[in-house]
Length: 276
Image (cartoon, rainbow, N blue to C red; front, side, top):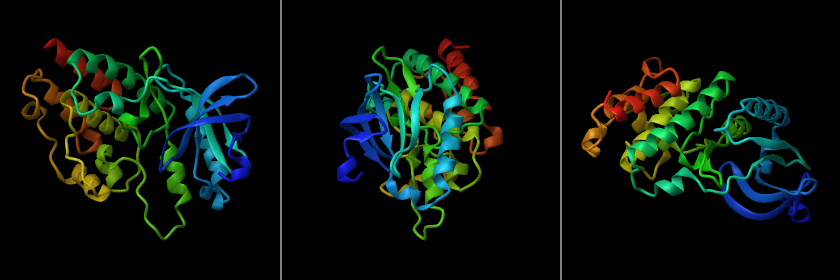
């Protein structure tokens, strides 16, 4: 942002920076009319070098806003203020799943409860033809009551569209959670998010990723294409045996062989936990 507009974006008074990355900067801001705290994401200004991008942004965000569910962080306002694209969403004060994981496995019953809620949110989005495309633990946030919600649906697509005429190849998002079809540059649908859900579940159950994180995003993405799905029971032998089936179903390399809904993954996990 320029120095002369660094304090407000469309009635949102910026209070502090919460984080930054390839999707822009997130601030805690106050909507001045209602006095409501929001999470204000300000996308990179250079995106609007593409004159068609503002319309694409509006269509995509309005589609995301229609995918309403308790496990989807609600959008409050979005738009273009002085050539600055922004999205204001509910402020989730309980931190991210990534922060809570911190390299440690969760108890199985905690995983069952979280995956059940998160899966319901994913399915609600997929029913509206909304694919996340960058689903990982930092995009699962908790409110002050400890309830999780998914944020940042579809924003990676905006960045990729903004880069369409660039000669520089930029990889947006966390490739540690990419589906094989995403790594191959194929057309994506909700099954790509289900693969990412499988990776997240593997990490929740074991405290580690199925494929060790690499310094190269390209190598990390390639592992999802070339490497077999690891046997989770070799990583954490005390898990119920059927957990391996859950991971294999969620992380099947071919989308057609994957669980068709996130809800199916949640149900399989619940059955595994019960010994069914």
